[in-house]
Picture (spheres, one colour):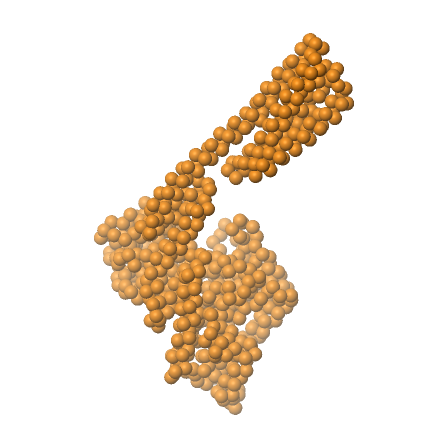
Length: 640
């Protein structure tokens, strides 16, 4: 029986053979199960569930689409598409006793009218159908509430998408740039959606209605980023990917990647082909402002229907316009090239050259050889698909071969040099696109996606294990090996990590015992010596003590304190990586202060015996204090 992950919390489910529903032991949610439970299907379902829980809705939906193609009677595949389409993530209810769906992708149409939802009901058994209907009703209620709020919001001109905080909770450079852009465009009279300001009065509320309303009404999105991983952050990607889909339905919308300190080729694949702006250049704000102004002006001019535009210049013919397109492409005037391609399509909606021109404009290629050698995967580009549909002869075959070859090389490279799970996910998306053209072994590679994922996890866990020093690091590596149980020697590696974790705990306990021992040496013994010598020097027969005995006592106390200072410094350095820094630093500081005080007080005590003057004693005390601190520093250096 294949293993499945909980759709709500991601935990492993305890599935009984022949059952189509199961209750999660961890979150308590009763949920539906796939009926097609072979290992390949289970791996794909689990991968899609993991991606959806992380907010990677588009990637998850692509996997569910592939499952529908392979298992057309599987209700769970259709239901998975629905969950991704509406951006469903399950969160704890206020009473913490159950999970409730939250919608992160609002749709105008009701889920109850969704074709995939109806397909899920069609292929479900009675138990599954009851759960689907209950969840769909709740999602529809949430969607209606979101739309009610969204429809009362004022429209926006520009939406700024950015990552506000980094992994440490600190504000990112991206947010500072977004703030500059917001102020500049607001000053120019644009109504800008900028979460930092727009949502500041919405604390404690669901942000989705306001985000959805702004995405729907905005004509331009400025996607700001300084690192590839910031563009791929779940909620940032949720914003720009939704807007990107809207641009395909509404040509008046424009998504502009605004990147800094990174190469355009480091942008996510989906937006790499768009005309972006490098905002690391001086005066970027003026250039960006001019670009946005041109876009708004262009859309105002192109508002009349295409038939009116066509009638305005009857003398224009397709050949002349194609020449203009070629000139614009060579000059890098991508927007103008795209505009003229649209003019051509008004005359001839099946013009292969116009779709080819739009494709080159989308991926910023100046000519056909450059397009064929492009490192950008454009298999999912609408213009590329239309070019294949309406083209004829060898040109079309060469274009398809070049596109598939480029995408295949990129996918293989990402798999072989993957530095994160996202690289593998993107490579698999490319392989999924290639399966439509049955290109080379892309289908086999895609079916082996779980193997690639496990191999990456195995390598990552092995790297953590090899460099681990603390118990926590060994446990982390062990849990990673445990997550891919059965793959290679993961089970034995997991046991080895947990065994080493126990050893690391014992070693750490040994360090703490050493700390206690050094503490005794550093404080108890010197204080005891000090008390003894002080008692001896204060006896009534102090005059009978010989100078030699007093000096010996002083030397003995001084040597003890110097040694303890040395030990204190050594201890601080030796245990710094394994023991709480505050604790060790506290002992170190207190040790220095107390030892210095003892050395400083020895001189007055000796002076009581009339062996040296008080002034000389003070000088000796200060010198002793300095020597003690130096001893501690030497111990610290040696300990390091």
